[in-house]
Length: 107
Image (cartoon, rainbow, N blue to C red):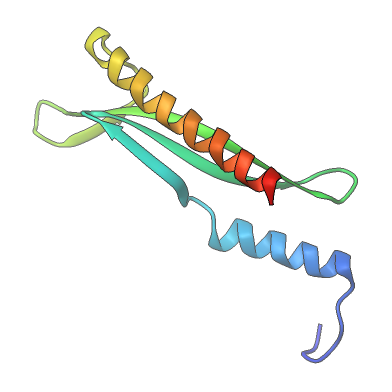
């Protein structure tokens, strides 16, 4: 579309969705660490079948460790001692999302 042309609302949303998925891809909204365990909150947008943009959050969890050669690696498996740290980090992520949602609904 040449510059100066007026876009329809749908074209504008489509462009914004493409920009979000291109420029915002792979960027966490928040990361919480407790020792070797980290929880990341991700903001996601998707285009529904009716054309509307749907926003939602997801949470990922991982544990960092050093391999035999001393290189840092990540895994989604937790050891017994990691569970309390994971629980604490997950609780913080949950609180963040609940309070964020409450703030959005109050505005």
